[in-house]
Image (tube, rainbow, N blue to C red):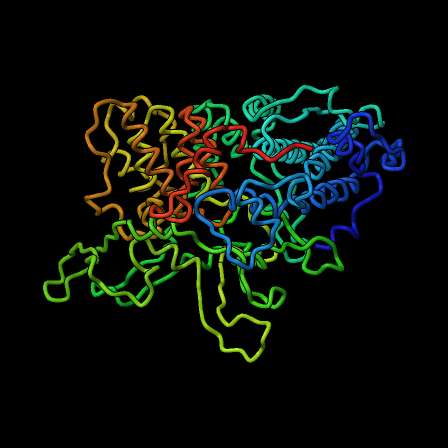
Length: 561
């Protein structure tokens, strides 16, 4: 990308005095105040430079977005080779000296966004089009997304939407503190007018599709509504993103599956999705540099993979809790009987012996992680080497299609439509599955929230998320919503299944702790999150002290210093 070489000087730098003020509101340093030109963004050439300047700031928080969201959850365990900084994150003991705990870096993005929004000449037109219209919307999404990450990681944070241009403005006591719900509600209103604004399109930049640099406005509005507890609105935003005429997003049918009834061979079209930035599954990523000379590289590969830079000692891997969940899934295979040639349904017996125990149950774990022994004569290099295919590229993925479908299911369920939500997991939402598996009463209530074109969403391009790793979920008679006493009971049951599916589908992607946090807030029950994380090392190694710590919500957040 070489972003540092195309960032103009008018892109304002963050006032470093703000981070100083977190430590002491009386401390200032005039040498740290950024120089700001008296210059409006008023030419078309300003567009790419200003956006790339903001992306340059986002590169700084890219890795930590994944690490803070993943290491504090229950699906990833650190090895003995992990740095002390990573261990402190996982153990909830990170203090102000931890390099991953720096609120200043989030405010650097926000400050750049505030400056752009305050100085862009929105009245400028060329050939009847407002020159900065699309970029203005994009910058608003960058700011909203960054504030959301800030609140998720720090709880209640100083909130301002104007650029800080003097030292005296960098005192956080001058601004209200907003929590995640307040931030969500603010930006729902702020972004709603831009829901139909098109992305800017600069074509390909250094072999990367520039449209993937931007977070879809509708999806972000759905995310904000979900955090704000505005469930029907969230479901509507997700639905409308997925079904937008001319830009529809069926689930696709990528999966990892057994190909024969004797469970000896596997077909995998799952892991490859994560290695290609052009995959239809990958929606948004933060583009990173490919060398330190050019700027900021991602080091996620050095955490999750064996690389030359870490002497092949990987630092993070799948947890015992993730292993248990994956093994407990009921795999269902539909195949043609070799004698009768009729379709048959079979599941592997518990006594089946596998080449790799990660093949038991859901196959996504086996697809994502590869462990191999490579003999070495080096005394400093590990011979046991891991590859995590979700972190095998130079860019940092922050949104993909299955994230949208799972949050859509979460919103539908909380809006009072558990059958529709469960259909996302089991069948996929397409015309016939909606008619067949969702009651007339629920179809009437959900109405346009589950309206999918019969010409675009087909059996051939749509599947339930669970089928991506657990075989043909359509045919699994054990994967159902049981008869329960009330609608609220059904909602909680389906939410548990969604939570499990989020684990199976998004492990190692930095979403787990925020997902657990949000589900706990839905339930008004911090012990839901606490119980999951306390079982990180497996059900036999329950961590009672960690459960007690996380049962108090204030311990979910990093110290804001």
